Length: 202
Ligand code: ZN
Image: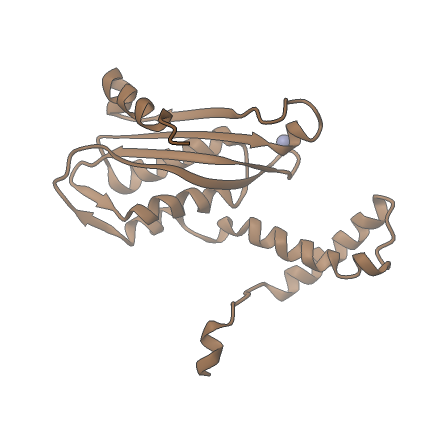
């Protein structure tokens, strides 16, 4: 068993993958392809597994991610996790949108592990989404789990459904933001956050 520990574990619901595979085979046919040709033989199964992976956020509980690592702490300054890589799928076209999330909160007695913030972003991103809702869900989750003085979330993302169809210029990004508490009531706090995330060391 010893060497098994390092084998990458793939956990998929076998029945669901089988059903998805069947549907993707049909989709290939409807798109004008021959699902039996060599290059496509394994495609339905690969797509089924890829889509299951990309939507695995439905199976995780984001509140629990934070609650599993909440610590009492009197730190009262801004905690900022910026440039969190983000990959999601738009729910209108099921095409990727990707970019960065910046998340800040001001603790009110409790903090969480920094990696948990990134995991919450990932958990909500791995569902069919719209960028606006994703932004608000991340904010509300941290607010509910930690009851901080305030939460700030900004997401900058490029949408393939816009870019590939020529609706949006290449490289342009959509920015969304959501705030609670002191980030809403105190413009200096909000500006401090915006200044911190707008610094570009590239
Ligand atoms: Zn779309």
